[in-house]
View 1: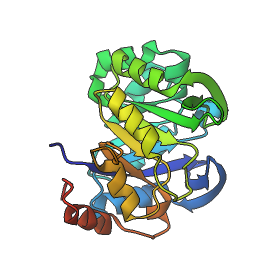
View 2: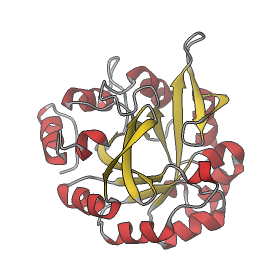
View 3: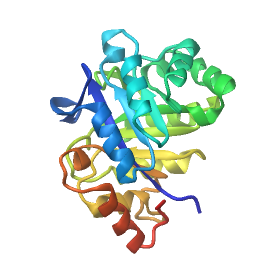
Length: 257
């Protein structure tokens, strides 16, 4: 059984880490380089750096900040935001990223997922899916541009499509749960994880140890995620990486030391 991963997420706007609720009401959460260094030293398994305004503002990711962040960590590092070409992927990998995360650009030009996997290996290509529950008809829609635009795509259809195109894993964010600390959307996570054969990183809603354990567990009540993304829970000092790992090991989950 592959060990589950704990992945702090650094959402960056204007060179600072921010955090909000349901993709709105952003507040400052610190310096990305300092936080990356802290989480790397604290025992996090990987890091995700998302320039969440890049696509909306029509610009590329802040490469210099990526380079300085990569220099400060010793764990795998995923970068996303404003990546819309193989050249853009190349630039970020050369800057020190281990993987790239595609979101809006993958929806606008799905072939980019295939091109990225062909050039760099599917292990380098993460597709981020921002999902919001449909209130009347059920299921979930895919949103892009930092959660501003509903594409009308069904989340399960899109998850299967990007897996077929060559994505190595899916970063799945529940927009309804984002920043609420009310728990991951287990139904959403389980549905996607059951639909694809690639790893699913659960994001949006972690608020306590039970939430993290539940999203990583298998079985009818678990979320079946391969990794748990964490933001405000760590940024606000509610829990530490060490506390989370100790608890998960005590529950019998396979976690990296």
